[in-house]
Image (cartoon, rainbow, N blue to C red; front, side, top):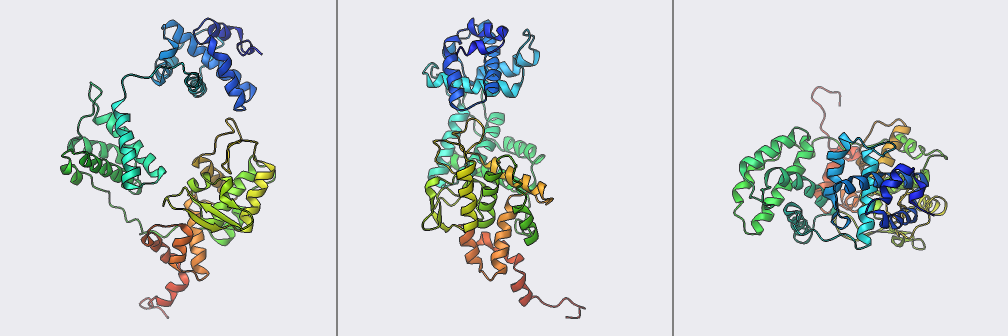
Length: 415
């Protein structure tokens, strides 16, 4: 089948007359192999045709195409595009189509290496390696800190010759002030930790930056002051019943929720569960890629195992991916992200009328239930896989049984 012939003759002519034409069949086969729907493939081809017309007019060589060209196309050409109809102008669709195009050209060995490395990205790669190898920070923690530092370096430490300049107290104060306008006090602690970690990294590299640490002050936030948000037993029952038979991807969502309710797994731990992590004979579940970077072997409750088994048998698409939970839309060979876990739980909250929005409320609920059934804080720490027992101390506030034994009578009360 001629891939170009499957779209309207106007964008088809743009493709045929461009330097991208020889690479379209491989691009089309790649989308089909990832099980994209026929209509989505046609939409992406029309998007590539629009981009091909733009690159042809500017005489851009295929081998030199990169992310910066796509960004210029989206930012400069698209807002004032007057290309003849029919033309694909959806920014979201164009970005997705062109991301696949660069991947296809890269796999074919067409793209040339960029000669001038980006100083900011190079610095962030070194900082990420430092956080992993010297600090042992978890993957999601590193991603969050790199995101913060990317914004900081691009705004205040970039020079005209693609070299980083040393941070200044004034630049740090200005950046923190800007960020605090849109961050809560609890989240601002992560901002301060990221900036401190970077300054210490620069000190390890030999820079004289010790004077910058006092500039980075954490906003006042008493982390253990509020009570943990928990669900009642009735709310947990309603949550587990909020998965009607014809719910799209309902078996996957139900199995995800059971993993969090029964085992207290974090979102990234659910995402990283593999088929080889379950021992069905012994009834155990191995959690390897977690925040503590340790392997934990946990008993697999029957309800959780049944939910996972039903999903594997009845709903999981055929794929070579070894993760338990995978995408149900193209590309199906890719595992789900943490956002799928959070969205599945939040959607269940909405369906059963629960006002909670935080996924961590379910972990808090498991800890509270363990304490109410006679468990100790050490046992709660083991189940929730806390590295530090101090993290678990917040749950002492919801241990009503033990607190009532040591509570003093309120002055003036009958007790």
